Image (cartoon, rainbow, N blue to C red; front, top):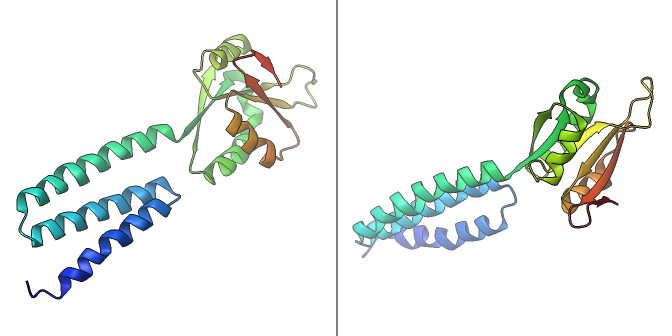
Length: 180
């Protein structure tokens, strides 16, 4: 084989693999994984292994990317339970949460509930990752909102970055069933 381009294409494989491992954004990693699979299929085709190249293109690239995309899309969501009629004053809080979570490639999904008891039960039953409701000790003029999360890492992130003055935060340990 006298093709001068083959070593260059083959050298792209470890380069793309390193880029894939070092990628922080999962959506960019999906694209890089697709490019890596396409390069591998091209190398295999150029080396005469058309059957392996076809398998890599169909299964290793197309099917894997599709399954990864579904998994990434569904796993990068923070589900926040709220009481339907209390959510009108929370727009600023939701905006700040979206900004904080966006830095970590998470989406905020609001899940409405009819009342506070159902909301708390949803947190205990692991239907949502966190809940947000009006604090019980405040009057109508000084409304504050309390957010509870059952995920320690989410609590750590929000505790260090949440700065809205009308928001408070706590961690709800499901093992102890008490607040910290």
